[in-house]
Image (tube, rainbow, N blue to C red; front, side, top):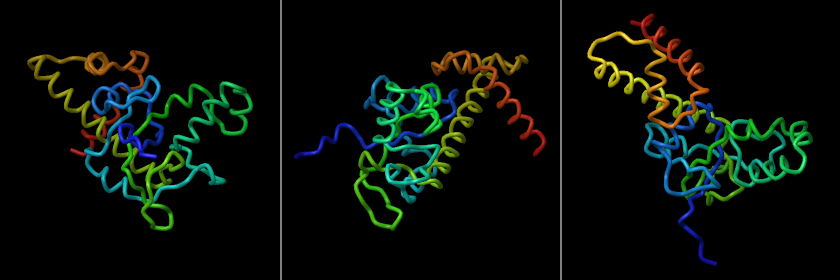
Amino acid sequence: MERNYKTPPIVWLKVTDYMHGWLQRELGCDAMVGDQRVVCLQHLPGMKEAMRMETSRDMMDRKPVVNAMSATRRNCIAVGLDLDAQVMQEEYGLDKESLELFVPVECPRMCMTDTGVLRPWTLDVCLGREQATTIQKLIRQAFWDAVTEYDRAYAKKMEGEKYPAVEMIEAFCADTGTCEIHIPAMRREWQRRVKREKERA
């Protein structure tokens, strides 16, 4: 049977909730999984190398990766939560709210297995432990780089006038479709980052 190449291979990756709006808006592609856009990360610095790292097959792993899951595993957990949320919480430590932290990420057609062999990226393939952590770091860096660039543009727009950090964060959230409930957490992390940068200078 001929394969459908319109829908790319995907894996589900856990991403901080306040980054979802930016991811969907800036990196979302045309492919959809339910009501979520598949996120395309390949052009981010370091991502091609990260995608070539060893993957895993989490349906057969006794200790699966906790910050990523294959499409098959995610589908099974979603169905399980609909059937008996309490059992799924006890067995897998996941509820519907925590499952929503995972976003669909487009993957290459081929993956590197843990034995060093290239294989097609199927629904059963998950990111490896080191691979998932590396990709999370790359997303986090890209996100805060985007906020930094937004802050520069916002400062220019304010023409030198001082403004509270929360005002810039509110504008960023509005422009990226990020829910306002995430503003306090984003502001705290932004201020920590600004403080660290000042201390390094």
